[in-house]
Image (cartoon, rainbow, N blue to C red; front, side):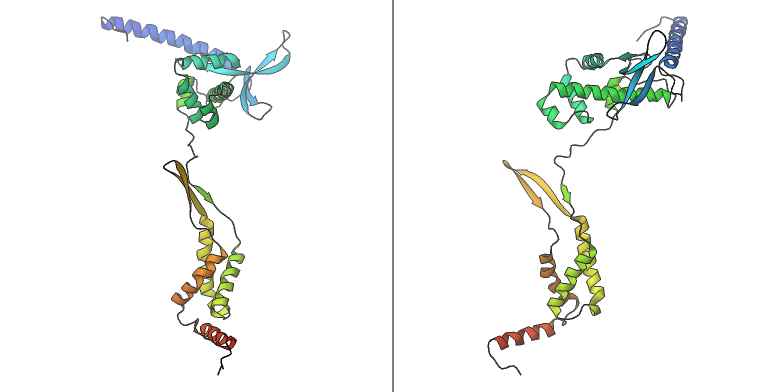
Length: 289
């Protein structure tokens, strides 16, 4: 940081720096109009468009000496540390530029690309150089579109250098160790039929007079079905232990419903119990009165 010997010297330095910055901003304004066009208009030499894969990229329109359009080439927008000066880069040069930013610490760049979802976990682990370079290109592509539209859409001429931009992106959460929830969708009519069948076999009575109970039990099992089963993985010693919560089944209804009937409707199963007992005695040849 500069130290001035007098207020006059400080004032002089401030005026000089302001004049220099004003010149930079004026040059930037002219360059922006030439290369990116006027704000809100698609009339610059560099334009955002879709490539053959449907990705948004920054293109440069190429013309011959007669001013006739020939083709468009993908380019990359590069911002200097001052946030004012910018220039175009090709694919190979932008890879070199970004690696230079992280010179001596390429592993940090690799982990940042993974964290921002530009390379996969396998590509991070294997340290595949081709995937690494492709991740850099994809990040530079997103950066180029973002910075160009900062001006063309938002009218902002203060740009963000790449290393600051990528740090500001949201991170992708590693979901490999998150619990997995499985939901098997079953129609309510099917569940209600299972409940009714279990009720009839438990009581030997019609379900028409127990509709409220049937609907309550169906609601309970539908809630369980919608919640699904939750599977968790936890390392115990040298192995991974998988735990899964109980899933809905017809056997579950048949096991639980009789207890619920006896709890909420005491005595209703007595008739069925008596009939079962008489049938059992009859099968033994005992006289039934």
